[in-house]
Image 1: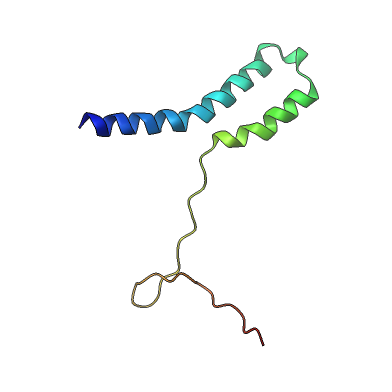
Image 2 (image 1 turned 90 degrees about the vertical axis):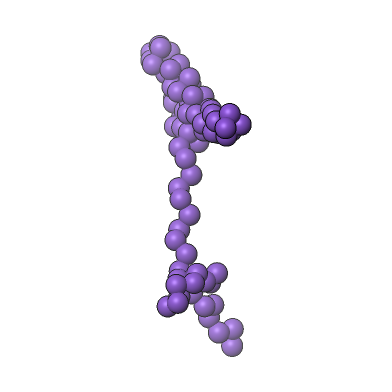
Length: 79
């Protein structure tokens, strides 16, 4: 049971790490806003999306039988 808990804890910490890093960079902007350059602001704006989780994958198309298909739309005829 403790191995499962340790695994979940490690995954949680790994997921929090990017958000913590971006928060630390953002803290620099708030500590002394008069000293922040436009370049520093731009670098922060470019970097903050990495703290967000990836969006979920799109749903797969299903057939009438309920089975999922690898190709939702057939490719056009190459003729």
